[in-house]
Length: 508
Image (cartoon, rainbow, N blue to C red):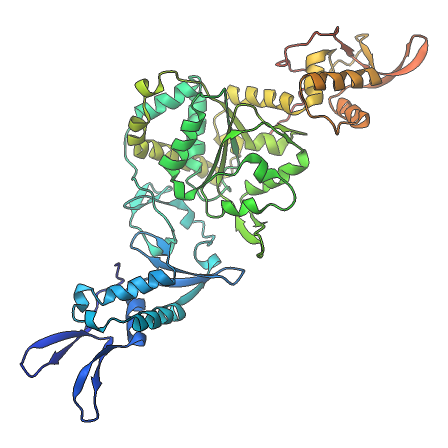
């Protein structure tokens, strides 16, 4: 059992008639009869409770719902302890080597009374002063097996109860090149060194308990069976640790209305979700995702309780075969969403193997954390997120394709039309407004796109936002409203959707 300090004068020496001495603890008192004779000994719950609180770092913290949780510092981190656990601590004192002559004083009544007194007498603290403290200097420490690592000084320091960690990792950082791990990720990312550099910074950011320096959401895309799941498991269970890894889907996070799931992000460093299903996300739903990655406190609903207010810092990582469709993508989404295409390695186990990769995690984690600390230092001096992160052509191309896939109107124009919205003259290309809309509905149905809420009025507004002009032209000798500099391709003909037609430029 961890002790705060060495005990002094904790034993009484009681002389017997046979001149032998027997040790009794300070929290035991003799039973004296009316004649002044010692008839036995008994444990005093009030004295034992005080001894336990003097010996151990313990306190109780109360949440907004009035629920009290007791914690004890085990020498490395704080861990919750319930009444049964406190009873075990009390009982252990009767068999402790230091109190070897106390075992015959043990009784269930003494244990229960002492445990209740320990609970009642321990210090009361607030979450905002302990586990939810906002001290920015404390955020620089990351707990590992034998020490806490300071990311700004690159120094290892002893574990401390003042940092209020409730966990530690089962490994320590190491110096090394982590060659196997880096080669595995490089090949999985298609051999793009810039992508490897970027994802290592973002992995390092997941160890930091705030979104203030970098705000991002990661999507890992690719065909099934290409190793995405293995990567998420490595990141979650091997690097960060399962205790601080949650598993909410993207739909669970952005869904509007009553959402009790978000409370699961409390005190989590990473949220990973595998096999994300492609879904339609209305732009109004993205507010939650922005809030969760903004670094500011928000209120999470808790069933039958008051809302839980906290600043989320769990890094969001989702693996999917097909990206969700998000309407009206703008600056906030582009600044946050990073899409990495994952490539299958057919002979992964023979070439790399998770056992070899796991052995390198101390060295690889240090590379990632140190890369993030450099980016954070630059952010602290006023540079923008886009300036401190490496520029990756692949990320930009993935975004453009995502934008096309997320905006069915832009995708339709790129696929089914000959169009040039930036042309200031007149190509002579025109298409009747209603004809364009009916073609869009047919095209969406063919491609299984959900456009039920896309009325003709909304459709026309989106066409205008893409830069096309509405004019009146004579069609079959009749004045007709048409779109200029656009014409439909022949039935059954579609452009390559990688075309830039229909993409709106979003600059940082």
